[in-house]
Amino acid sequence: MNERENEREDIDSLTLGELASRYRQLQALVDQYRDLQDRTSNQVSKILSSIPLGLAVVDNQGTIEATNVQLRELFEYEAAELFGQPLSLLFPDMGELRVESSARKLSGRIKSGEMFYAEVSINEIDTPEGKRFCVHIKDVSEKQRMLEYKMNLASMVSHDLRSPLTTMGAVLTSIEDGTYGKLSDDGSQAVKWALVSSSYMNSVLANILDAERIDSADLTLISGETSTGKIVDKAIRLCKLHADELGIELESAVNDIVFYADEARIVRILVNLISNAVKFSPPSQSVRIESGLNGIKIFFKVIDAGPGIPEHLQSIIFDRFQHISKSGRDSKAGFGLGLSIARVFARLHNGEISVKSSPGEGSVFELTIPLRQGPDSE
Image (cartoon, rainbow, N blue to C red; front, side, top):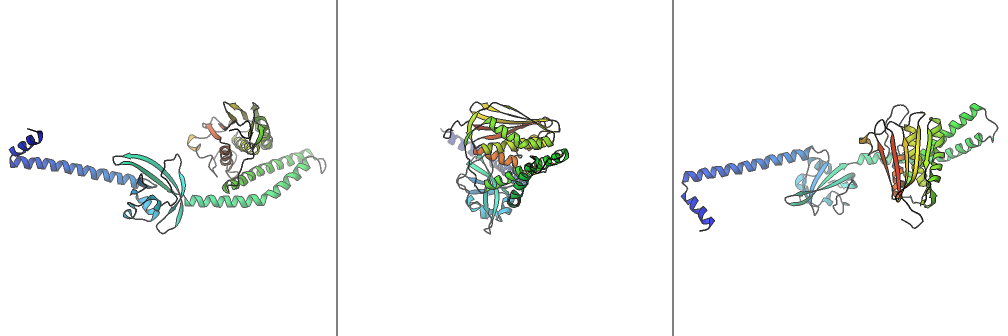
């Protein structure tokens, strides 16, 4: 006799009252299960609703299975209108679904057909039904408009100032050299301060023009033979007037290594790092520049004794138009482009810029790029 026949005999032997009792027990279990499902569903709904970003859950084919209120309000759809639709309905240029370490900038399309700028992050999750993707969406239209406005304004300012600044710098240099007669000590000091200001403005102008080239994709490397010593020497000479004005000494420790790179771009990176260090260093302190070879990578370090950078700000200091406040001198000077441009130039060389810093302990910015010993080497 098999188990099924035994179970049937057990059921047959039950009285009607016992069967009713068993049924009530089973019904109670079903009710508990449904209640658990309802509570779980409500909890999930509350979690989805509490997320400040738009959120969509899609399958591995990109079909939308769930959305939160924020997403539906952003795209002006009802939940039923989105269920079962491809994610490309919202993002025509999405392409293949893939998990990335950073957010992608995409154009989103709302129900009316109007487009907007969005940052999209994708995470992969495992569910009982298989692999799913959580798509997080942030509307950055206003941020993008402000960025474009700032860059357009900066571009106009830079083009209007370029010629006058060049002329002013040339005239001031001629005056300092005695072309127009010998200066008194006070006059010489005044011209020196004017040259410092002119040099600083030219540095800001160079950053603005470089940012414009980056935006227009009009930026190519012109590589040639150079050396760490030559680059450090040029960068220090470009920063010395500004450092002297603020009472900051520039020190260097260079292991001179010959390599191939775009010398002007590497100098610009170092100038931006040194200028930043000088700006944040207390008077009578020093900024130290080190360079050399570490394995198969060229490195440049800029070390300061400034107030340091809190850890939560270290991830944003390389973004455009970012400023970190400090006591003392005005930290809002400039456009906040120097570190952003430095990182772009580093990555064009397949390199990177990192920062190590703690509040009250100064900062160490390090540029590393692969060693190239010839025009065709990698």
